[in-house]
Image 1 (cartoon, rainbow, N blue to C red):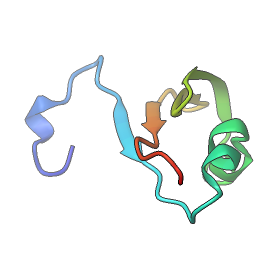
Image 2 (cartoon, rainbow, N blue to C red):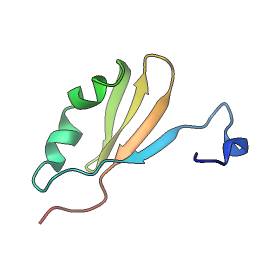
Image 3 (cartoon, helix red, strand yellow):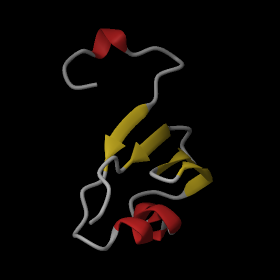
Image 4 (cartoon, helix red, strand yellow):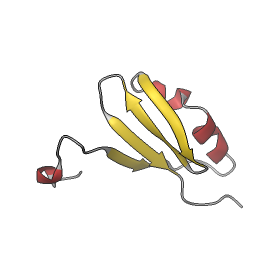
Length: 71
């Protein structure tokens, strides 16, 4: 969102990228306990090999992905 709050509507979600140390990508996609430490999740599902869609208990909808492959 940044400063462009006028773009927000009732269907907006938050997209974000997770930057992790080499070798840790799978852990952050397969287990969401690191994310639940910020706020409880109501629902989550893996929507690709690179990320998940999540719904926090307060109704905030997010999706996150790691687009960089590990070598």
